[in-house]
Amino acid sequence: SAVISQKPSRDICQRGTSLTIQCQVDSQVTMMFWYRQQPGQSLTLIATANQGSEATYESGFVIDKFPISRPNLTFSTLTVSNMSPEDSSIYLCSASSATNEKLFFGSGTQLSVL
Amino acid sequence: QQPVQSPQAVILREGEDAVINCSSSKALYSVHWYRQKHGEAPIFLMILLKGGEQKGHDKISASFNEKKQQSSLYLTASQLSYSGTYFCGTAGGSQGNLIFGKGTKLSVKP
Image 1 (cartoon, rainbow over the protein chains, first blue to last red):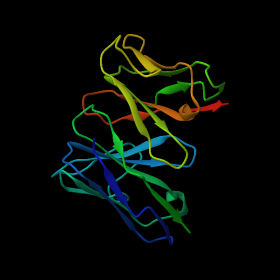
Image 2: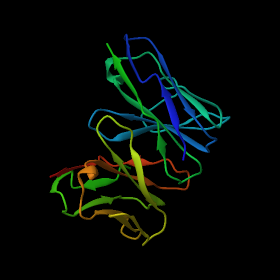
Image 3: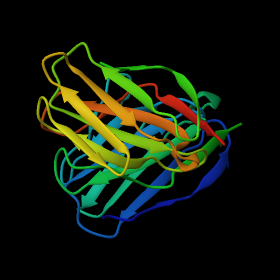
Image 4: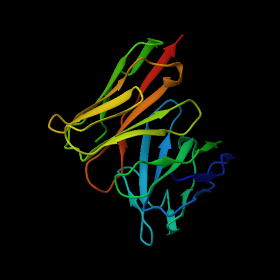
């Protein structure tokens, strides 16, 4: 199993600023994903973080707003850019060792934008 | 396309059984089931890859009807620890990017 460390665990940010969330996996993984979850709601897939290439974004999410990096097989970052209160949510990093294997999740980053 | 889960919520007494359903309007490559407790990350329960596949461990099992594009999660003789929100996640292809349903909130009472 993989252990995922995500930081920061929470942050309060001002409107118009950016926050970068880091995700570190304790072993090499093939797939890494970023999800967003509003309290009491479902998990919404933002993008698939591809190692060595651009991330693949889901409908409604764009690279300018949510730039993602994945420099190697154990690390990824998600930046939430030019934040507004609507970006307040929990952001979750997840990973799997192969395609269509079980997902492991980080503990999440609770973001509040004022 | 987001899979549809039912019911949205269920309340059980300890020892009772429950079934949670997950259906999709598109062909499915796989179905995953996860449980999330309040304030925690989702935890993997099981994955079903083949049509007609059934899996289970302890008193939790699941089935996958590929033809009907649906899966069901069965919780038998529920325990207090089963409380939480259950999500099904579906993959339309082999890439593994999961789209999750809205969840089913399960509460098990003594």
